[in-house]
Length: 119
Image 1 (spheres, one colour):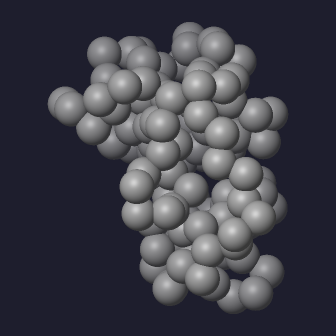
Image 2 (tube, helix red, strand yellow; image 1 turned 120 degrees about the vertical axis):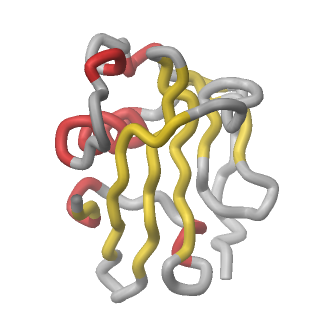
């Protein structure tokens, strides 16, 4: 079940923790040629929306899903044993979405820490 205390703010700069996850994914779980995304200033990422299902996925651009491609793919293994998948999506050299999806029920309702991530 989702954590009802989870603060869901949008139209805000990405947090230091969110930026660290994106950086980790680019450095450790990239898919294919991601050269166009290496020079992105991650500190400029801005959260504009989240998935309506209640997962912790973050859109960094309006209409993020349109024509985006997978640029990194990882797994979160939480201390309680639950797992979630993470996919970083890009479009035309811009990072547009951090998707967090369930592998176990409701695992996608919390942002992992760097220690939870697996390539």
